[in-house]
Each structure stands twice: as structure tokens, then as C-alpha cells.
Amino acid sequence: MKVLVVSTDSGKVFYADTDARLDLQAALSASELEGTNETMWKLAEAFEGSRVVLVSVDEIREAAALALKAKGKLVIQ
Image 1 (cartoon, rainbow, N blue to C red):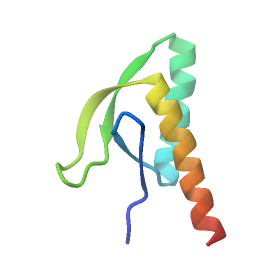
Image 2 (cartoon, rainbow, N blue to C red):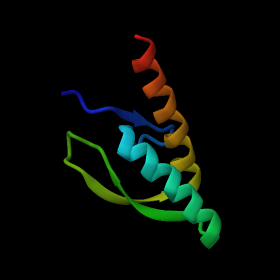
Image 3 (cartoon, one colour):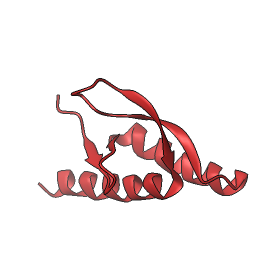
């Protein structure tokens, strides 16, 4: 089974499966409630193994949008 991932402009690779999309949306909601601009996140980088790094809310927002687009492409194929 192929893992669905997306890469942001900053080069960070995020998981993009259903659970990951829900997590991304929840992180955006939490950032609004808490007024935070960054958080620690587990990235999907098979060549290094998964790793946890500091990401900005803008990167999470970008990853969420890319993940939705990636899922949409799978649905129409």
C-alpha cells in the first residue's frame, strides 16, 4: 500500500491520508484557540524515517490544502 504524502514549499513532507488530514485540521483549530504560530509535528520522510520538527501554522495550512488536493486526485482517477 502506497502512503499518501505531500511536500510543502519549505520541503517538509507531511502525511496526507484521512487521519492525517483530520489531524492537520485539528491543529489549525487548536492554533486559533491558543493563538499559537507553531507546533511540533511528526513528518513523513521515508528516507530518514519519521521525525518530529517544529512547523509553522502556515506550513500546516499549506499541508492541509495540499492533502485535500492529493485526495481529490485519487478520487477522480
